[in-house]
Image 1 (cartoon, rainbow, N blue to C red):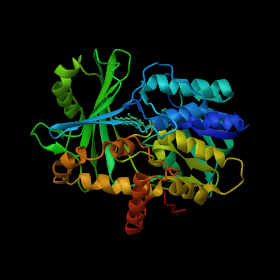
Image 2: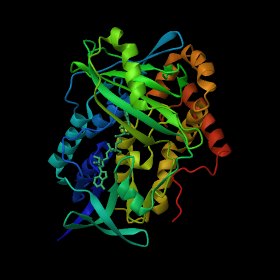
Image 3: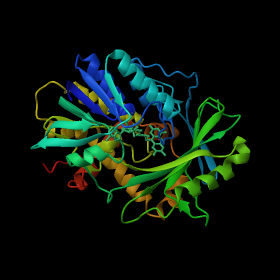
Image 4: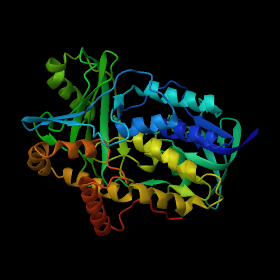
Length: 404
Ligand SMILES: Cc1cc2nc3c(=O)[nH]c(=O)nc-3n(C[C@H](O)[C@H](O)[C@H](O)COP(=O)(O)OP(=O)(O)OC[C@H]3O[C@@H](n4cnc5c(N)ncnc54)[C@H](O)[C@@H]3O)c2cc1C
């Protein structure tokens, strides 16, 4: 049985479902494929920055929860700081929504717009002619599509078969999340604890978070930064439980439930993200901010970007990574370099206290992924200048390069 489409999207997380939605709206016969049945859970902090919420607004997808937050509260090294979301960004509020709800919302929206949905079986067996993807399978079905968007998440099992390589010499995240009941579930701030200590009291290169989600519970988790050379010697699930016990009294937390963990590629540290007629987006393309582990916003944005070049009959092999580098290259390279410095155990205890006493509007913009290309103010210019300098110094480091 062979099915023909203009566009096939593999993976129906936020990146893939948003890509399918954009694609049908642009008039392409589109199929959206996921190995899971929806609604399904996904290991995540559930935090949606104004940047993510802005993308959802652009898509016309309304978050079906009234909970909204005003910014970040950062804690650690004997101090706390409040960083409201900047008033200059097109969307001035953030939220947090459990992923089984957010992802189902997006899948439903793409189906309502006209996407065909195939769930419950993975996409497998890509057949390539050169680096053109001519066919693949979903169970018994053979799928042929003129263009394919691959949004199959951190492991990118399908992407790997197309040649995608994750460079673990560059910084990557390891993180765990849980849900705890709390009477402070409506608290309108996302909380991050940047002084995260393990059992021996050693500061870890990462942070703990408590993101209220407005449904009687909070998403509580922690993440650490790692590289192959300096692996974070930490069991994230244990660290999470320790962090929960430190915060239990203040937040009146119930037990940690549904604990899951995952590793995530960051800052564009992958190669071979496109072939003649296929593009990799979202987590699979390491579109995650190395400074905060957030990727839903980038997933939604890369979905929009990729669908803009569908149907142009261009060979996408170099076009897609070039576009990614234009939009995110310098910022990701800078964030990746800063994050790498954080994996040196001496650094955080020295820099953390200074950072927390620095200008909080800058922290909110960095931690909330809220410096965009359009911004022309001092912070944005400084960020971009540093990005250009670091990118020049680190030319040759993997950044969506192609070996095809
Ligand atoms: C602990 C943790 C906390 C995080 N917290 C946040 C946060 O608070 N805010 C934030 O913005 N980001 C956060 N992130 C990152 C965020 O989860 C990801 O950036 C986001 O899920 C990326 O979406 P995606 O659509 O690219 O991938 P995913 O959401 O992983 O979706 C990939 C989909 O592909 C499907 N799939 C995989 N292989 C196949 C196949 N062969 N065939 C068909 N389907 C396939 C999977 O079933 C899945 O549904 C966190 C990550 C972790 C690990």
